[in-house]
Length: 143
Image: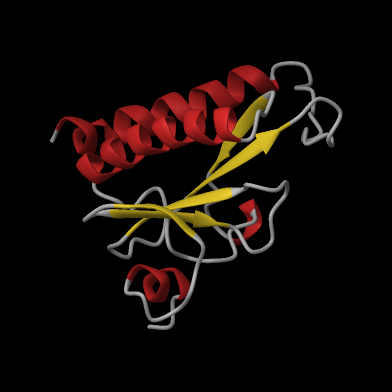
């Protein structure tokens, strides 16, 4: 498997690492949205948000929360975005689960997706589709 993030975790590819422990690595994105744009990855390869085990996801999310505060303070950012792209259509380009920490500043750029409006009773139709799927798959959550 050719995965640049696995190579970074294994130290066979270079990266500007800002944090590392036995399970996770955080490093600067080489194509940043803003300077200081940081990626947080598990050292173990998981394709996306849906494949990482829950206990690793919890630990990684706690680490990302901590690092987001560090990045914000270190760079005197006004805010930050935490993003995880999952799948081609969502913009995922490296298929190794990761979080982006993007420092944000007043008037730096606008990163707001377009929104749509539900027509007539469409909102109820989508609610029912999702509720039915929740009922169908809730054994996974409780199992």
